[in-house]
Image (cartoon, rainbow, N blue to C red; front, side, top):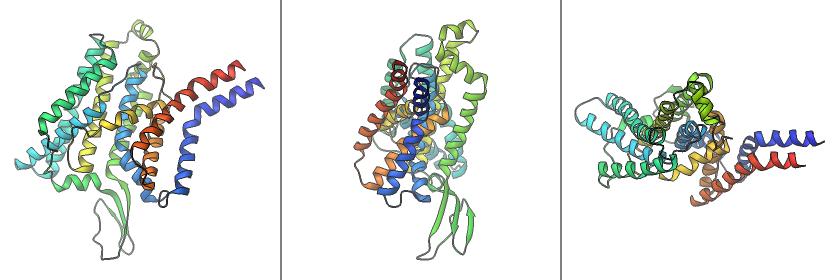
Amino acid sequence: MKNRKKSLAEFFADRWALFFLVAEIVFFAIVSRGFLTPRGIQIIFFFGTSVFLLSVGETFVIITGGIDLSVGFVMGFASIVAAKLIVVFTESGMAPAAAILVGMVLTFIISLLPGLINGSLVAFLKVPPFIATFSMIGISHGVSELLIEGVPAKNLPHLANVIGNGHLFYYARGKGMSIFSRPELERGEHVLELLPNIVIITFILIAVFSFILKRTRYGQHTYAIGGNVDAALRSGINVKRHLVTVYMVSSFFAGAAGVIYMLQYVTGKADAGAALLLDGIAAVVIGGASLYGGKGTIWRTILGALIIATLETGLRIRGVPTFDKYILVGVILIGAVLVDQIIPERVEEE
């Protein structure tokens, strides 16, 4: 009986996030009209892209036993850099498509710099991750404000809006399916939009880095460092160099979130990701990663991020104030820690 109770508790503790997500979807489907529709589901993913990206980058850092508090303001910094670069390239005569592509690539590269600094401070100068990345909040925020001088970046080409708010497929009755291009409609006609472009871009990035974490030597070294740093050193892993690259991965995903934000809202803002730090870390912990390191997966993190995105969308449809979401996310985060730590211990004591 004792072993049976233990196995049932372990089964629940391992899958509680999935059960919670299903219950959340059922609840909002009942109380919120239009929630469980193709449009409602796509809204969850569309507005959840920033949380997905920030939490994936945070997963790499947390697995090593660290934390990155700077991702929200690095995201804002990247949104401004991308917007400024694209405007400069467009005004210099470059075609909009080329300006957007080059601006995005350069932003991805520039966004590695905060991670390089964070990782170097942590790995080589032994600065605690909390202090190093907390300091980067002020640096990235200050640089962002200097770049825009208090005015959000603007005057981006219309193509940025088309990419950021467009879909892969459009279906209109009587006109069939079209790809990328929204069909022209007569008054009263409706079009079904499927697969937002930015969601596709987001999940391609996530899939690539999920493979890296799970199937490559780089991922094995990441887990090894988080599990036991001394053992990792004895096995020949260059721990310092690896930690630097892990923080650069986190910064890269924050930069990607900034680029996605720029495409969504056709602007750049210094505080674009300021309110998303809690969501990013909570998604990782809800997904089962340990803040002590050595444990966590990308797709479980995405499950945690989906819980938060679903909650936010459901509350938005219900007209509930945004700050209520912060309270609920905090409660869910505490619940995640309790489920992970208390339930198995309680069963063993019995």
